[in-house]
Image (cartoon, rainbow, N blue to C red; front, top):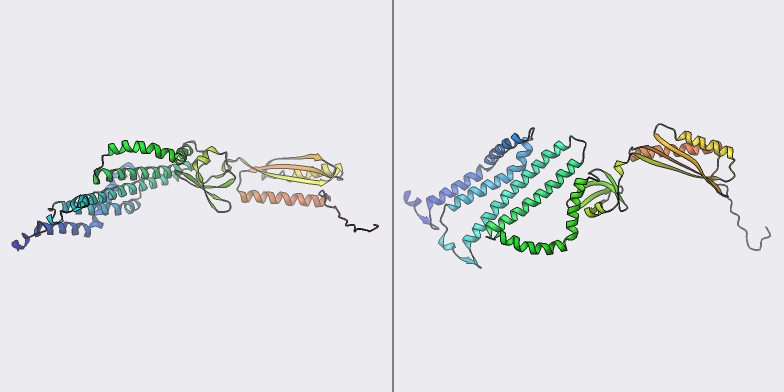
Length: 365
């Protein structure tokens, strides 16, 4: 038995190969249990910083990247204890197989670690989002989403730099020097994207609108559904999904309809020019009475102009900042009441009695 264990295959004894294989199999078989246990330890540390955390949500988010990180780290550590087979010491292009395998293992470890960090950021954002949902200020929600995406992009860039440095032996200092020149050229070509990025910071700190607000910008009216790093998404009243660059949201005249204090309704009537003054005065009094209901906070009714064809009556009324459905119901109620008043007073609209006579050519009539 000892002779068999001391046999050499691929420049390693059978005993060393079996030990490395046993370690890898052990970790793979017990990966779920180990990763759940380590996730629980990480949760215990996080629970000391934040109270009332959701243990299941935390573990569900990080258990897979933690398991992947454990399996690859232990497997690579076990394989590194073995001698690299001399038969495999060949060059592929300008690199040896050993260098390629080393770079691949490094990339896998960095990717697993970055994945773990990204999931951790997702959980922190989830905790902050739940706390923000307890407040009435919607700006907290959009700030959390914005900084979550921003930090994740930053971590991904750091991961790429780690891969370049540790796997491909790039000098990051020299890389930054070269990128500073290239970056200047890219910045010029991506000027609009950078302006949108800067505009997103303006939106989050100046807060002209938040997620859920109804806004009107550049003849587009819609509800804010998401504020991103480059653009803002709106859901219009036609249920279409419109994407507006953040720069236009900042530079354009924007009307935040959700911040209105009242809703305005209008009455525009053109009565017949031969309507008696007494009836006109009685009609104006009747309209003012209609607009004095509890749903309407203030109103104005005036005899605006007189012409040879009509008498113009204009009315403006304001309700509270109610929903559009409630406001439409008030308008409908007012319009029906005005029509009923006109019927009762026998008031006629201008042109209502207009008759058209067609005279045939050659007719004596």
